[in-house]
Amino acid sequence: MKKPIVGISGSELTKNVGPFVGYRRSYVNKDYSEAVIKNGGVPLIIPFNEDADVTESQLELVDALILSGGQDIDSASYGEEPQPEQGTVWQARDQFDMRLLKLAEKRGIPVLGICRGAQLINVFHGGSLYQDLKYYPVPTIKHWQGDTPWWQATHQVKLVKDTHLAAIFSQVPRLRVNSYHHQLIKKVGKGLKVNALAQDGVYEGIENETGTVIGVQWHPEMLRAHQAEMNRLFDYLIKCASRKGRNEHAE
Image (cartoon, rainbow, N blue to C red; front, side):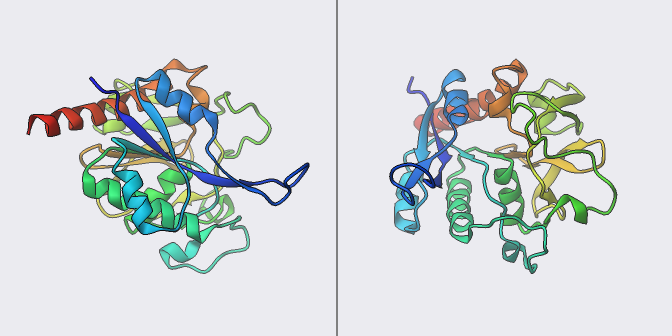
């Protein structure tokens, strides 16, 4: 049986030292590709572009989609003016990722949003964000671990009972995760529900009713080599893609 092809939304990196200063490169971090390969899928990086027809053709090639991490989401996407602590935004990438998500949901292919990807899913569905930790109504734990190694978990999340995420982790009530986000989910988007919480009440994950769209604020692709249970998210995504493919073939 053909292995599912998992599209990974790409970003761009601009050289600022050495030869080719100012040269733009399409990329994703290697951990995304490795996580897909190790869990039975075939990774396909989807380069950022601004051509809607090209994006649609790109989505026709994949059986599942990972929305990768990156810049802050522009507050204009959820109807707010930028506050002082909002970080670097890239409106064109917001639009690109939202096109990918819209097409994926239209086609019924499973989606996993990671960090920025989870926030983008929420905003796409009409939700909003706290533009920085300091705007959260109560003091928070540390959600940006800085120079602590990326593969090291730094805080706990509690999984919400009777959610798809809890089922993925076999009803384990808590996980230890890494953390690289300063923006937070505020209003939850339509058709979504919270599936994980930090000790301070910060929403650490969301999902839709069917479990075909899941977002998490941490980076499981960075943890999976040291915390084997994090592979379960990628295994779930790829199995969902395989089931969809078998059902379509049967029809």
